[in-house]
Image (cartoon, rainbow, N blue to C red; front, side, top):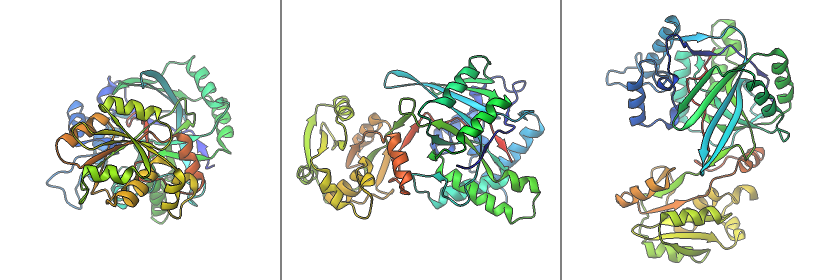
Length: 425
């Protein structure tokens, strides 16, 4: 795998910012307009002003959300709102949260990873889009920093790294401890040279799978190439070859992946009765009395089960009768890809059986099932489909095959916060 090294993290100055809850934020791509407004109001130094500065009516090519982010970043450094640690460290990062009524802990570490310029050591599982990459590249040019870590997975069947980190953390007080959106986030500075060397050595032969942050990873690679060909200080050329990363063990007991459910705007000429009639040839269909019952049945249904809502009280559980039939309808993909529920939904149900467009202008992705029903009742959509979550093992399997999953196939939870540690290039 690419080289992993510790770094001198940039963090909020506790003498200036006494409550981290007021200055941290989720990753930029899950911040809604209303949350952006809320974060702006919460504190003048909230990290949102860097990762997702507001678009203003007065914006021009020379003065805009990106240049403002750069100005904020420079002023926060000058005013010691953000201060750099003296020595190089890995940053142990623990997130304690509740999922399906049970308390879980996701533990990893934040470090710098050498960017894989050849593109064969760090394995993605999602396709990327041009617009988000342009957005992040414009920001990178102005701030010259990794403001948020990308989220990657590595294998460690014996849990060696996690055990080492827990032992270390049991003896040292956390550098940061903040409760945000029902997740307890703690950071420890791991600056013990022997432990750092042990982590570097252990990680040297590991495969790395991107869980979250595909666009930012590709942008970092673009930026490194761009900087290499510019007349800039050598230290910037060297530092731009590395990216701040949150490394988490691919342990399914520790990880949680949420599904993104699908709402269909335009069904064409299809009526609810037509949908059921077309689907019953390939799926067993059982009616559920309400959303709660449907989601319970879906959770227990196993592979290739889907929930469907057609409005009013029409909740249905769909179970694929024979995966071999859907395999034939999905062309030019390996079997593991064809057997993903998101693949079956988009290519077999939407395109092959129902003949509806599954483009982003016709499909809305929503995480909360209750929000799905609410939107359906508002009359904005013709049908809704619920999925079980994709497993972390499927992410690794598809990435190892060199394939990309259909969009919105995974939503890893919880995501690392922005604002706990920054890597200044």
